[in-house]
Amino acid sequence: MTDRREGAGLAELFSAHYLGMVRLAGLLGADDPEDIAQEAFARLHARRSLLRDDRAAIAYVRSIICNQTRNRLRHLRLARLRRTDPPLDAASSEHHVLVAERHRELLAALERLPRRQREALVLRYWLELSEQEIADAMGVSPGSVKTHASRGMAALSKALKEDHDA
Amino acid sequence: MLDDRLREALDAKAGIYEPDPQAWNKMREKAARTRRARRFWAVAMPAAATVVVAGVVTLAGGLFRTDRAPAARPQGEVVTDGDLKLWFGKVTLSDGKLADTLCTETPTTSQCRPFYLPPKDPTAGGRLLDLKGDPVISIGVAGRDVISLRGVEEGTDKRLAEGRVYTLKGAPAKIWVMRHPASDRLQFDFRSTGGRGYSLSGGLSRCSNRPPEGPAVELGHGVRATFRKGCLMWWIDDRSSEVGDLGTDDDYAELLKRQPLAAMGYGKRWYGLTRSGTARLEMVGSGGKRLSAVAKPDPWGLGVAVFSVPTNGFELDHLVIGYDAAGKEIWRDE
Image (cartoon, rainbow over all chains, first blue to last red; front, side):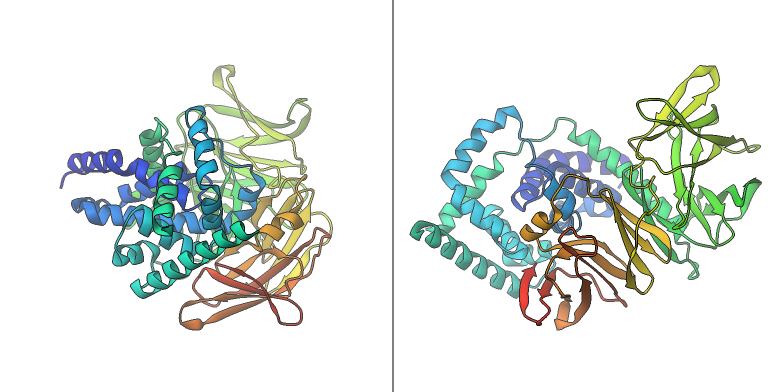
């Protein structure tokens, strides 16, 4: 494959999947999802051989998003905690308010979950990935995905019940 | 059904994020930086097994690993500035291409760093800090049009130090050296031919301008930490390893109540800050292996504990458990 064709392939993948990857990073709790998504595609750029197979390329980007988000949450935690919530652009602020109102409890409970449970739930219920695909993205076994997802759902259910009972 | 509610909530939240119109260009810039970084690693870690990663210093907002000897052989002149020797070197990369490096040698250390010279601006290519160093020595690479350098106080232009700019025959760039007092407000002012000027200030961390003051916390196995006016500094084998600008107005104890762990570094040692009251931490790895670190309680009166432990090849994992002095589990961080 020539450099030019690889460049075109990357551009197509970027165009088709960039927004989805930003959203994935955001749902996983990244404080700067755009930066993480750009970083993931930049890494894909460095591994051009993956561009021969779109599915492999996207699976690779997804795994980078998971890893990057997890690592940043861990290693840059102090810096992250010092910031206020990431600013939302004006166009989306109204939407944000609506989301916050309708799904506030559930999203808050999701954010409180251990990181791997949250990852498993986002990858399963938002991306609708298979257990194997989730396992690849998280770098764990499919059995572990089942455990994390099941514990995550149980914890969400309990948290919502407690909120209502309170 | 909870499944459906969750799908709906995730869809709704996902809709918040809209892409930056400049995303493609920003990604390409990152890709270019990644290429430079890979080039750097190829320089810093040539197949020679003798290369030792000595530490990480914060500079220009990023982390730059530095390697000790063997330094690249000089390509041309060697500049002597006090007890410093500086030169440009070239290293052959694995793909056969040559990479430029700026090399420095002190009586005790030797290191090379790759440099990237933007077309116009001088670049702060490196910095040396000594635990007992006062003044601080800053070094870097500048464009060939740069003719002088001085350190001034940001905002007032009060002169704090004079720098030296060295021209090396046939070299692709110039080398600059400045010995200056530690100052939060130091600005590097460069002058170039034609009277043009460039300044570097914000890019150099205010913390990296500051040698440690006050007692260092000894954590053993060559690791110590200092904290002063919002600047947390980690020292590995008496060299500044990582600088964290924690700001001066935050309540860190409060932050660590919300998140129990702020692991600031992982390599040959695992070190960081943890919640007050934590006496011991364990990182649980695959197969149940555990890496245990004893925490020093609140050395600076900030309500945080500090820890460090050699990793001895333990692979970074994501489950960490904190215990109190009685050995009871008090937090879990995944």
